[in-house]
Image 1 (tube, one colour):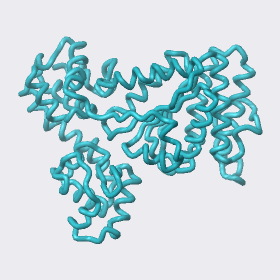
Image 2 (cartoon, rainbow, N blue to C red; image 1 turned 120 degrees about the vertical axis):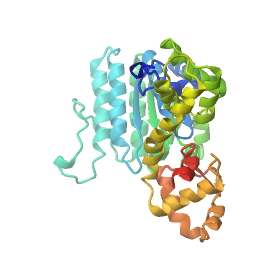
Image 3 (spheres, rainbow, N blue to C red; image 1 turned 90 degrees about the vertical axis):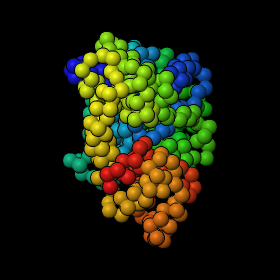
Image 4 (cartoon, rainbow, N blue to C red; image 1 turned 30 degrees about the horizontal axis):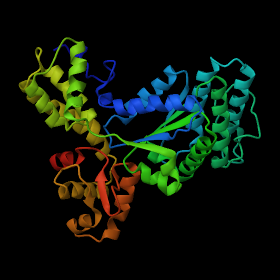
Length: 396
């Protein structure tokens, strides 16, 4: 079939496969937008799940929903050990510009931008030379005295309050979307929780939507004991069979094509219902099929191509980031779980490798920091990437 028309290619179609089966989360966010805009109390939202389940795509859809409701919206991706002020400043700058087109008092918008600029400029270390200072690209005078103390917790509360009040002026709100939220520094997580707590108390129209790996709730809880009251938690996982079929059939039908039942059986078995894999195997099957409907023979022919692409781009790129000691640890995890997507006991890894548990701690801690594994619960460890154990047993 025509590869140019392939609806499973990255960026193709109007509703990507990763978003199929997420109606519950989309509907819940619609309610959040309505409640917050009406001044009613509502918690911010945290999405958690393994890599490849479509959290980033869902965040993008939620941002689009906010914009369609007239909200200001900004999105950032957290980076390990990176300062929060710079990306947060850029995201809120975008959100304020969204609001400015509806605001009737340009001087009020400039006032909030001045506070944002003051917040952003505090990203430079004290005593830094002018040439080394980051310039946020906000073309208004700095407004000193708000959100510029240098204490991120104080500054974030003051900044969020200013931005939320600006949104209230036009009867809407602001959505701040944070991807890879587990990678925020501890001080920044604490500040974010404190700011969300303050906003919820005052019913200010600003919500945070975070997305991250399954251990993100534990990261938030370790920062502030009251974090479980601040956020609604939604676990994003595999698609069930009906939603996985829809993710394949709907894009194909827009191109006047389809899959037969046996092909859908084979694709679900290969993908495990993980949206990233549904798209990868669907793309390969489309390219391999000479005509519609796509059959099980087409899927069988395409599977090695999809496997090879995943081995390089999805699995291999992550495995290459690991040191030899970390690779040994990962391989032991895969062997103990027999390639299944299941947590393993950390003490069992030491026994499997005939090593002392303490000698493996540096490798485990580094893998946690790199986001390749997560602690499912105390004394257990699991891959953040689905099917990673299967890949390791086949390729290492």
